[in-house]
Length: 430
Image (cartoon, rainbow, N blue to C red; front, side, top):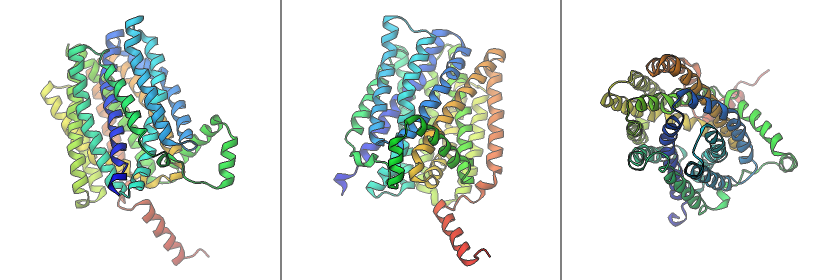
């Protein structure tokens, strides 16, 4: 019945959390650059935090296969709110420095990484609870996230221009806390881990979280990289997107706009990108059946390459806005498809481990890319670093399009398994 639907509350909680993260994602790189005045410091900070963030993510993934996912989401948002709120507090009492960013960044990772994975793991359960088609629900979720991502950077630009970078973080903290409160209204049952065999459950209770985390990492790597070609390519492509776009958003563009004396423009570029993503996500949700998944996949990747090339040229602000819109418009179908492949092909019992491993490996890969980019910016300038990122993205695009496993994308995992089962029945092994 409609009055018992929980999807609107789940989407509202996710939107609130993402809105806060969008503001922080614009403000924090600018605050760090203003505090240290050194692009290499930003890359070094990312590298220092990489391994602890990865370990936190792996432990969080293991916890999501052992404990209630709704409860972990609530706790994670509260920790995130506290870590962000401490930045203006520390700045007022003692003054920020590089090591404060390290400490508070690690504290934020304790909340952000498991929280992100918890929401990913909850999404299929929420769709199932409400009897909603998973692919359509993912399209709706992507559209709402894209709308929030349009508003977030623009709000960040507005706040930074009005009150400064550090005070704008109070907004982030409040939104994370509000997200936790909304998640509290979801029934605990939706976050329950799927039933497993009694012997497996009893064994899990006796083992420590460290051992479980090690097993979660092994399970996650096996599921993501060894069981399904589409899943493997999707995972590697996601890594490439995170590394290249993270380097643009987290370093090259902040340095570019800071050196030009207009740091607030970063927020408008990111909003333009998100606006394009929103439009294409809505269009994909409505028009997906008109083209094959392979066609959407190829068109999306080619368009993204063109958008990255425009951004990488670091053109005038209006041209950069156009490039950001092109990139966003092109990214919508690929984003929806990669997410669908993850949920369609990862077994429910391993979802926490697999998604936790994926998020953790991305958290390790992205800082390495940001550090390498910061070194390139320091040595050669942001223009050369940007062109290097364009070259990396073109190579990733070529490999993703050439991948043999991505040529039959219109077969779901269940369809493929059924076909293989029928083949075995029709042609039994001697």
